[in-house]
Image (cartoon, rainbow, N blue to C red; front, side, top):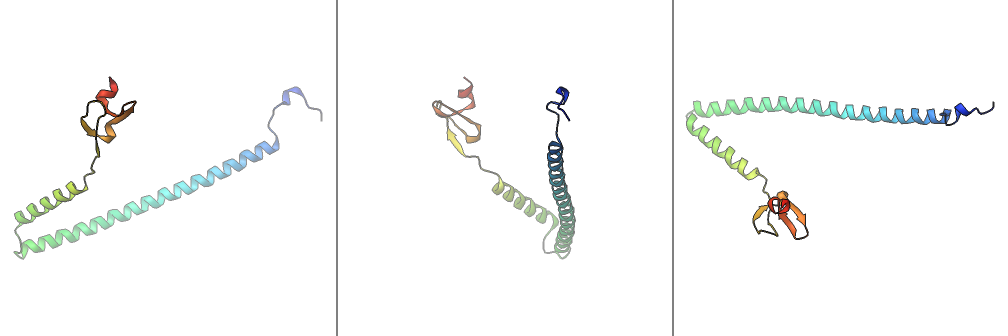
Length: 127
């Protein structure tokens, strides 16, 4: 069969096979991603159930402490709030501070920019 001008550059059977292979690979990758998403969803649900069980145990134990007269409800609440505040404070991410190379003001390193002077604050960087 002679090659006609309107067939110039037309896809060949090999081109279609290559495209089919790519689509098969993409489908396998998508299946893997959806499988991972499904596993994460199941893990999230299981953790939710575990948290509910732990909450129930903690409520029972604290109720038992109050009922047995080991601690008053107000004292228990005060202690728990103090502990929560201490844990929150200790978990707060510390932001490393640096001195601006231009004005020497101490600023969080994440709020700095690099210039020909070095690390500068946003005020000095903008002008």
